[in-house]
Every structure is written in C-alpha cells, then in structure tokens.
Length: 150
Image (cartoon, rainbow, N blue to C red):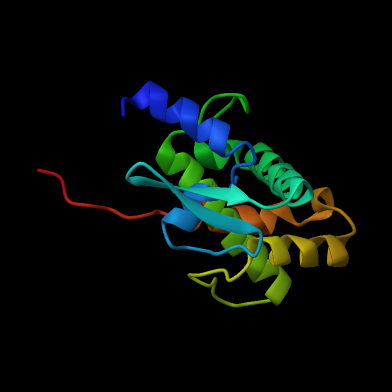
C-alpha cells in the first residue's frame, strides 16, 4: 500500500483519532477512551468519545501555547516535529500528573489520560486554570530516547 493510499484509508477508518497517539505508541501512557486497530501492517489508535477528544485537544492547545519557548516555536500553528510532539504530550501528562498527585518526582507512565484530565477539571474548574508554569517544567525535562547514530 503506498503512503498516500494508506493515509487516506487511515483517516477514513479513524475519523476520531487519539490526540495522544504518539505518547501511547511510545509506551508512556494509556487511556480509557482509546482503542487500537490495525490497518495493513500498521497500528492506529481511535478515541471512543467526541467529548474526550475535545478535552484532550483543549489541553494540548493550552499546553502548546504555554510551551512555545520550551519547544522553540514562536508560531503555535507551525507543525511540530515528531520529537517536539512527543515531548509536548509526554511531558504535559507527566507534569499534569505531578501537579494533581503532588509528587516529588514525575511518573514514567500515566495509567489513564482521560481520567487525569477529568480530575484536572474537577480540581481546577477548567483546564485553562491549571498551573502551566509547573506543568511546563516536565515538558522541558522530557528528552525522549537518545539513540546512537552511525
């Protein structure tokens, strides 16, 4: 299957895709609202709920806005590289978990992104009231995997 045909079929099959797909594929988290599926020899992640996807989108938009300096991105509309997107997703949920659970050290795995965001809304009334200055510290701290080249 060529790449264009794959993308077209993927988007037809997965209209409500998981916004934290990179984070889940990399093994840093799980989500109660996600379902994995296979297409050809690849895997995708589907979100079960419009409202869950919207909440994740709101959190990622706010996170990206507050992480512009950390990501070295002046325009929020720029497409992020895979590494930047992974850093934003993983660092963001680790930072949120650390703030909500009042942890000294961040976790390496978040069990349920949907549940975490739900608790955030319960405690702070809305996602835009979160202490992003604390959350962003984990975005800055996440370095991802450093493979050897050559």
